[in-house]
Length: 100
Image 1 (cartoon, one colour):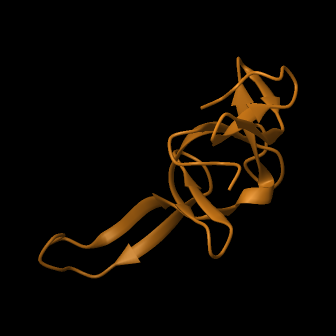
Image 2 (cartoon, one colour):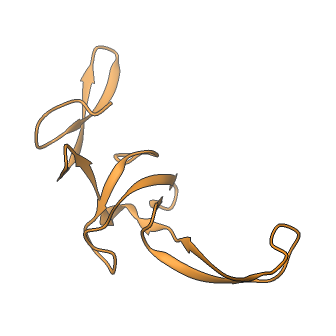
Image 3 (cartoon, one colour):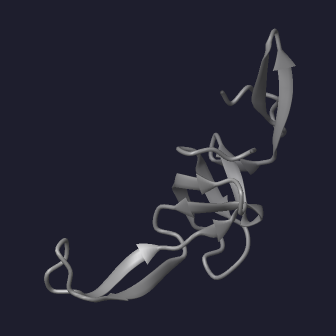
């Protein structure tokens, strides 16, 4: 997976195009990610033990990973992989620097 939890990403397609945020979770099976402040939806909730009042809740919805691009040094870049020693590491395609 080229994008991981904790990465800073920019949305490149859809209603939230050009917004940036940090990835909070990844669903690798369905190729979806949840990004802070992006793809916000309103959810109507019934009163429950956790939320006695219920009402309208604003929360992030999953967005497809193909609509996200990794941000490296303030610019978007594609992500590639490279074998260094015994480890497979991610690299920024624009600069060739190791991400992690």
